[in-house]
Length: 107
Image (cartoon, rainbow, N blue to C red):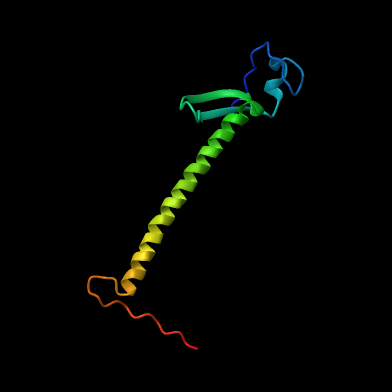
């Protein structure tokens, strides 16, 4: 991984209470984030404090969870419909009128 650049002067780090140009490049929370911004879709290739990126990363995580939930629901609906169609055929709801006999329950 590349060496972290020295941050621009002028901002005080809330964790170290010093100018960011003196502490950030040594801090383990100074990370490189690459990808797309979850709201604006602009490309990101930026060094910064992990705490600074938390809101953006939380938004991205929430969006991914919503998309996963929608995909699972869609998948469930397809299989529920297929199961209902299979039951309908087994009970004689098909065009032949016959149907597959259900197994007898042994008592």
